[in-house]
Image (cartoon, rainbow, N blue to C red; front, top):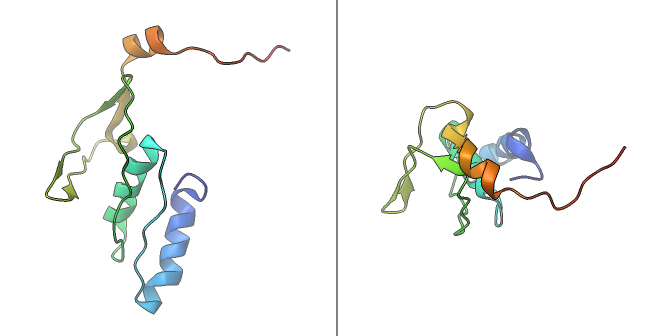
Length: 101
């Protein structure tokens, strides 16, 4: 999902659809990529499934998504419905490196 992005997956969908093939973007290791997959699945008719792993991020607010019986609800909010908790972000983010000019 992260390598090809939304446009790449939509291009792949265009190649697969005439052949009757389903699209399942690989996404292991990316929390935001999972939510991107769900929105791609909403936009195309030959989407098979989203790949989800148990990642979490305390600073990421995810409202409107709920997994039930193998299906996920998807919010209509902008930005995939994801928001940053500014307070948690400010206190929990650490810089692993710094670029000096």
